[in-house]
Length: 159
Image (cartoon, rainbow, N blue to C red):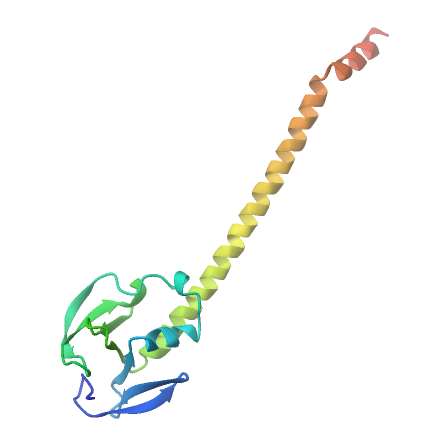
C-alpha cells in the first residue's frame, strides 16, 4: 500500500498495541476499519457513549491506499479533528499526531461522561432530599390540621 499523501510505501508497525500501516516520511498511518475502534478503546471502551463517528463528509484530494477510491474527510465525532476514511469501509487515514488526538478526545469524553453521571447522581440525591423534606413538611402540616391537635389546642386556650 502507498501513502495517500506522498505515495511512498506504507510499512507495518505496532502502535498503541495495534498493527497499522505507517508512512516512512511521517505523514501518518492507515487504520483498517476496525482498528480505529481499537485505538479508541485504549481510552474509552463504551461504544454506545462515544457518539456518532461520521455525521457528514466531503471528498478529499487523496486516494484510499487499498482500493484507490477518493477518501472522504469528516469531523471526527463532531470534534475539531478532520480525519479521512474510505467510503468502501476499507479504513481510516490519520495524519501524523492524529492518533494521539483521538486518544486525548476519548479520554476527555470518558472524563466528561463520569462528571455527567456524578452531576446526575448529585441532582437525584438533592431531589430525593427535597422530596423527603417536602414529605416531612406535608406530614407536619397534616398533623397540625388533625382533629386531635386542634382539640388539644382548644383545650389549652379554654383553660
